[in-house]
Image (cartoon, rainbow, N blue to C red; front, side, top):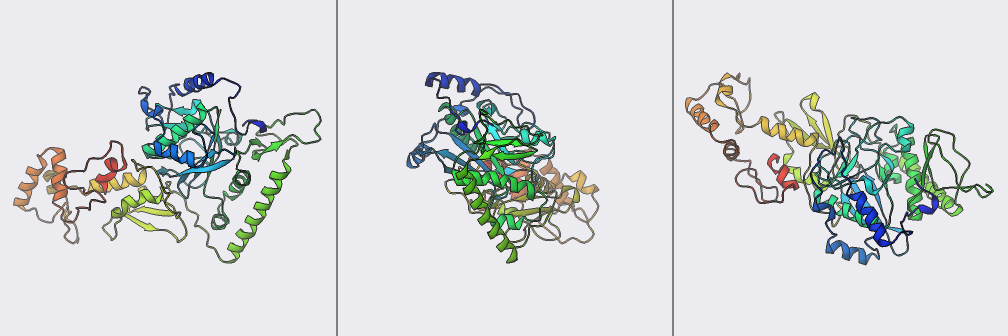
Length: 482
């Protein structure tokens, strides 16, 4: 993943005109991608949208140029994406934190094609991996599988960070968020950065999280990721990443006594060569790890509960988006979907279905909502598919089906009931007339007949006219299922 002297890779050897031409050519490549990316529409102006005045002002306040290098950090459990940018001191500083709208799978690495897992590890993004032609607004390919993944025979492709808030193994943002992230990446490439690093973690590598997840079988892998995290946090520089003996190696240098040898060669599946880590970095990392181990051990002695090991969890979502579905929570024997909190201190919310074939969950975060986050767009995933199916199952059925439907054994009368023990001729005539109306009108009147379904302006009423919202926004796609 580059040499030590290229920790912040640049194209300074070329003129500004040549740099711009080279990066523009890479950005204009029309990627034909499977999985998350299937659109073949023309290059849109959205890929060239300039940074907002607010972002430019923020960059100035933080002493960052818009062309300086960037670095991306992803945290699954907290459902957050961070953009770090190099400041005037040539160190990385946090620029912005974005709530992730949707990620799929469970905590842990991606292993094979189709497992719906969002990857964890260290990935390199070049200009050619930016896709201005994405079916999900804008995107960039994470480059999965990397050398580490391939060393273990892991399969998969076209794993993205993209918009549209829908994920099947990707990290999905809103359209507004990915537009800004894409623009920051584009400007860094225009400034000469040849590639930027993405660090994808299961959670923030804190002693508290390590104590909670201590029984997880992925912990040895996560401890290895933590080493890379520690290198970044103590240096505020992009760690140089290599792979040997099927493990990550960070900031490796040629040994001082190597004589004329100028570069260490790494084989992902071979024995690690002799190398060293700079004395200052090694000492700082060792001290941080020592303190973290002590704090983790102390939390365990104090009885910090472990997070239950569970499978079948279908990803997560930041609380800022989950809050949009407060009114989707249902309770009682007749509820199709029950949303309830997990063990205190964890960040998941279960979405348990009455049908075992639909069992799954959606995750949120115990962390605070990111300030200054971009406005909310659309989302998808099994949680919302279940909600949509549940709402559709409760719509009034045509009279022909109602007449043939068996009477319920002992169900209390409900405004949304779709079957009765004895058909009422007057009601049947009304339903027959209702079934002949256009579909859109039928939906509005059916909802209007439910006296308690009207929602507040905050949650956007499902009965009556809808407020005008931007196309592709969170509300325009999902307000109808609230």
